[in-house]
Length: 535
Image (cartoon, rainbow, N blue to C red):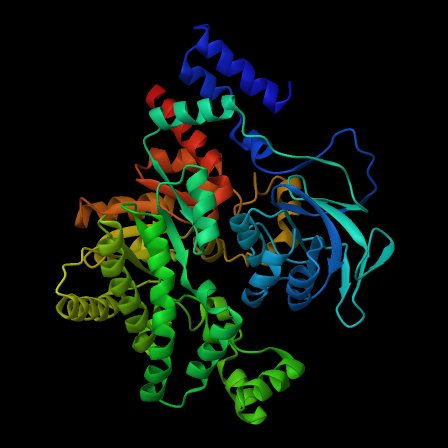
């Protein structure tokens, strides 16, 4: 029975009293809802399969191959053509190109790679880890399935099952039927956990609200700086020689950040909004390669050698374990102070405009020691006092930490002394617990699964025995210190049904996932409530 027929049958049977609403909910596979939210390949269509990779973000899309994010933006803005962005792997600067494309295909990367995470947030199909493909950026060619494809040729990707097809393939468009809405209503009546979204743009927020999100569980502020104008100011700040000069440049970024947060607060009136302070290392904002360094040095009017020296200075051997997250906030508190001021000033302005209380939740990433959080929270509190005095307003806010390192889970009792909430960043927690690179693990994880070393990809569904035990430990120890501590999850596992059931069993207050996973999370949370009541 197809997913649409199965849904209709179960809703009809519940309405006729043949079985209960709860039984109807338990009879639906949450992942089958994907077909109601995204275009899918027409099962009657003739297909020419070129290769198969990881099904990183659901849905199907066709378009011309484009190898450059900038070119994708240009073609989209001038011609409006459907595009598939093809890259070895994506980086934060590719976000706007990804937004212009209909789908994304990468040779490298796993289920929690940059491409996968951003594509899911945007609701765009994505296939990652196509190790059999070869991308030649110099000649703009893609070698795949024994064929050599050039820029402009059309392919189709299916992010639901990871397949890549030659040419354009017929698709079926999604329909949110009345039965779908009825099922979601029943799920909301039953579930205990709240469902938030990972979002930082107005479009993400609007999509998430349409799908039933109840606030933002993760706003990744770094994505706000990759706009073409803003990134130049960001680079100017990074290239500044001293703190005084950095603060001067940050004053120019302040109104931009404040405007971002005002939009989020106004779109989510009265709902929780968790804002993560700047997380990635600063080198991610700087140009890569000689050609880009020359171009940016000319655009900024600075010496090429000065820019090259700064790029080399900030370059790290293991940047994901390097100078990022709270470490960056401790080295450069002026960045944290600017972001905190933008949040608090936006909260005051939005509360006056909407008449609804704004209680921002400020999240500090990559904490492993209580002392790190204490230092950063002190500066956030100072800024809050300044803004309250300047605006003659009272601001309610929370300061919390991401739990994404094993040491943070072990030391949760101490960290909870200064943390009013924990949000489990399970992408990094999985990476640091296993010692797996989430961008490279796709090369061996299928072998691990095939040889029964691992039952599933731990980046797709929580590893209950290892990562899960750390989550359980941190939850218990955090509550010992602070009984009313808020607990949630904002990693990509927040949209995985099995992981959601585990989170419900741990008593977490909410899960947060990409906007297009929200209905799946709502149904999964209801099923978790029903199953855990049966135990």
